[in-house]
Image 1: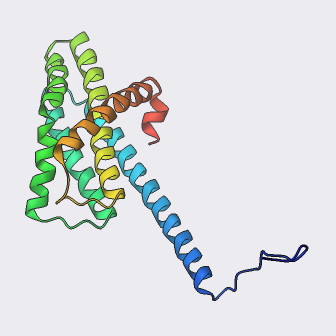
Image 2 (image 1 turned 90 degrees about the vertical axis):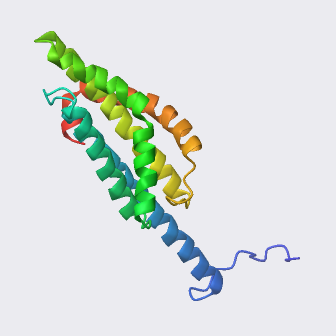
Length: 189
């Protein structure tokens, strides 16, 4: 036991094992924070692209563009997290994205409204913008959460991922509505 008045808090030697561990923990935390910031940037950029593609006046071409945007986003996230990406893993991503077809069907319905002159183009475009933004946000968040916790494409549980997707999709649609109502926010993503 330390005597009263004795300073029990001793400075850590810079070259001690404890100091080296503390530095490693700090460096890992900084690396994770930088990775998370880059992942958020990738998601925001792709959400803006997905929402902009909602303005494509040709029905269903926007849905095809959305699928390509999402594949590109997941590819960027895979590279960011240094995940192996074989043909089998690409099939997992394809399965996840295409497994969201019931949700994408809503975007397709909005897209179909674009065939109506005037109001149909506007209403269809706005609807597709919001759904596309929500879909892209949710897809990105699902993969980021999985990769950030050490997951790979080989151990992605599609059932759990779809549940997480639906929660994030609701949040993503709300964020997309806010962006749509604030055009400068949409342009500066």
